[in-house]
Structure formats: C-alpha cells, structure tokens
Image 1 (cartoon, rainbow, N blue to C red):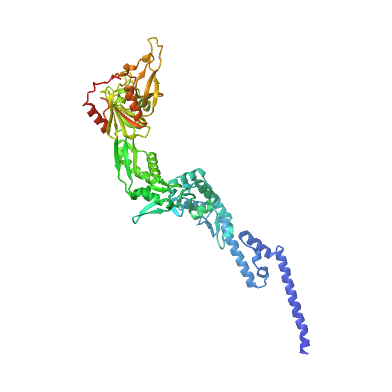
Image 2 (cartoon, helix red, strand yellow):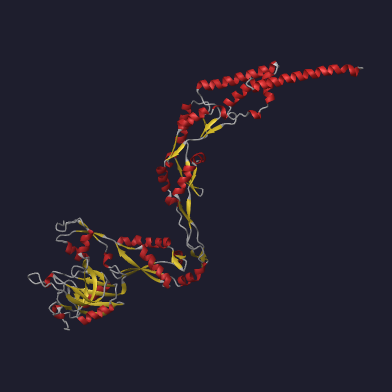
Length: 582
C-alpha cells in the first residue's frame, strides 16, 4: 500500500523537473538568438579579439544571466559594471589598453602621443644592432647607420587600435620599418676589409728540424648583395634580435694537400736559398739575409709543382724596400715574384732581384737648359721634356723644380750582369768587360757637336747587321738629294725620337759611295751613334747580347759603376793617340 501511494508523488516531481528544464532551454534559445548571452558574446568579442565563445560553456553563461539566485545576479552586475567602467575610462581618456608592447617598450596606459615619444627615445638611444660575421661582432650600429627608418606614429596608433587584445597575456606591435639601400650598402662596404680572410694555400713549415706539409684552409670575402637581401627581407627580426649576420662567400685554396711536392721542397731548401739585389746602373749587388724558416713560408703547392706564396714573399720585399727607398731605389714585387717562381721551376737557389729607381726631383741651376740637365742626369732631354709637359724650357728659373723620370726606362730589358761596355766620350775610347775582365779596348767616333751622343747608362736593345739613317746634313744647298746611308753591325741603345735610335755600328756607307770619316776617323763625326772600325764593330756585335749594359761617361756625367771608374784609370795609362787604320 505504501509503495503504491508513493507513485503519484514521484510522477508530480518528475513533471516539475521537466517543466523547469523546458523553461531553461527556452531561455538559452532566446539568449542565443540575441538575448543576454548573445550580448555577452558580442561584448567579449569586441573588447577581447582573442575571445572564442566555443571555449566557454553555454550553460555557464546561461546560468550566470538567467539564474534566479540574487547573489549570482549581483555578481554578474558588478562584473559588468567594472568592465564597462574599465573600458570606458580608457576609451574616454584616449589611452592604450594595458599589456601592449612595441619593440619591448610597454606602451599600455599611454596616449598615442606619449607612446610615440617613448618609442622615439628608445629607437634613438637604446636600439643598437650588432653587425657580426661568423659570430664575431664587428660593430654596434645605430639603426640610421644601417639605413633603417621607422614609422613611430603608425606604431603608436596600431597600439591604440589593439584594444583589449593584450589582456591577459600581452600583445606586441610589430615595428613598421623601411631600409635605405644606398645607406645600408655604404655601411656594409666599409666591412669589406674586416671580413676578408685570405685563403691559405697548402704549404710547408719547419717543425722539430723537419719540413712538414701544411694543409690549405678556406678564406672568405663579404657578399654585400646577399647581406643586403637578408637585411631587407628580415628587417623586423634584425631589429628585434639586435643582430645582423653578414653573409660571406668562401675562398677555396687551389690545392688543399701539399704533401705530393714535399720532396721537391726539401731539395730546394736543404742547401739554403740566397737572395740578392742587382743595381744595373751602379753594377752593384746587395745581399739580403734570409733563413730557411722564412723561405719555407714563401712556398706553396701549385697544381703541378711548387709555387710562390705571394703575400708572404711580398712581406719580405716590403721590408727590403723600407731601406732601399731611402736611396731612391726599390724592388718591384711582380718582377721579384716572377724571379722566385723561375727559380722554383729551375731549382736555382741563387736568386737575383733587380733594383729599380724612383723618379726624383731636380732643382734648376744657373745656365741650365733642358739639354744640359739631360747630359748631367744621364737621361735624354726628350724623356725629361715628356715627363714635364707644363715646363717652359726656354724660360727656366734658378731653383725651379722639375721631375726627372725613373731611369728604368733606359733599361727595359733584363740586364746581363756579367758583361758591360764602357765608352768615354772625352777620350773617344771604348772598353768592354766580361766577368770583370777587360776584353775589348779601342778608339771610337761619337756624335758631332750638332748631334752629340748622350752620356748615361743604357743597354743593347736591338741587333741589325745592316741599318739605315739619314740627316739634313746630307742634303744639298737646295734641299735636294737627301739620301740614306748604310750602317753595318748596328746595335741600338736609346731612342732619340720615336723611330730614330742611336747605338753602336761599324762603317757607314754614304750615298756618294764613300765611307763616313774615311772609315777610320776617331773624332766626333757621327750623327749621335758610336762608330768603331768595321771588323771591331762586328766583334762587339757578336759578343754583346741583348740586355748588355752600356755606360757612357763624359766630363758632364761621372762614372757610376766600379768598372767604369776602372776603365777610366786604364784609359789614362794607354796611348789613345794610336789609332789603327782599317
């Protein structure tokens, strides 16, 4: 009986629960169509851009806004009032909401103007960018040095427009940057030398008394184009990380392994290498101190054998030049490197480097003319004139400074160090030495007064068994019959004008069939050349190879070499009046 009487009560309770659930579902449906819950979603989406209603329980919202509990309703109302007051306060004051950052600067609760000022202060005084290569800092650069500019006003407005997006986790406003290509490129080019690392060609060094092979190493040089591309495409990251890593191009050595030529290097170095400098004008040899440790650094492995490590050998040449330039001389690095390379190929360990001459100033003296200056300096006047195109040679002033060109122009060929021809214009005599031994000695005929032979140090440049010449002196009074003469065994030594060369020769056959000076004169008779008896001219022609140095001395131009001084002493002891006739 009790069980049966309870059934109507249970049915009433069930119907009440069903009615209550139905009412709640109707309220939820109304709120989703735009009621209280829909308004809450709209509010949250407006001021919390990151809000997603799918993450919040619909039932919880429904309960919050539909609950009959006075406490719940009061709590919801208070929360709404606080939020509205908070939002209204920032909206009315025109301030940026909290938790907003730009370049690490907290700009929340600032006006856009205040934010722009704070960001400018940070940009101008705090932002520095490390310019690095392979992790090494080369420079801390200001943004403007790197060609970077920033739109701070737009950033401040973007911070204001972010609304409540920074709550609760914060939001960062990306910098709005531009890059000046020319300024960025200019700064990067300044790092070219600092970034550059010469590749190390495989070579050799002494270790524990043994010569060992040293492997090659890669070098690098700056890739400006790729570094600029990286800066432009990743400008924001460069600023945020305060770092720009420069891009480089690897430089690979020609050969990484020098061991295949180790035996050749040992042979070259075992007896020591001797380096000397030869001054062909003074016929003087200087010895340079070197040791095998130093020479080993000059060697590298090429593809087919030993080669010169140019930068190491250049350092040696530079050290010698520090002293040589005090006397107006120097070693040409390219010539010296070529000489060492030839020695490596031939296996020669006695290496002679040519000493060259620098241009030098000359102060005009009383009674000087361009012609007299040339005879005193041992350089044809025409060369001095060409080196001083602005000088008025008809109005020289005492003390006026002119430039004497390098004497090297007179010795363009490799000099022959063991042969030398000496000509004394005053005594009209010629002597020649080979390996410092007197070989030839005879009288000559040099240029006449109106076409004198130049004194100076020259060299044999050409060989022609028969050559031709002419002069106005061969013309008739009417200016006709200006024919050529023939010269036998001609060797040119310097150019008077382009295409006209003075030198040594034998007999001169004139247009009328006679010989100049009868073929045996010993007075200044020629038109600038040095004439010997024909048979002797042939001896000289056959003996003096191209490059043989010729030193012509006179009262105006003193001897420069010991051999020339020795020649004058010898000439002073002989009878120069004895002149054989051919």
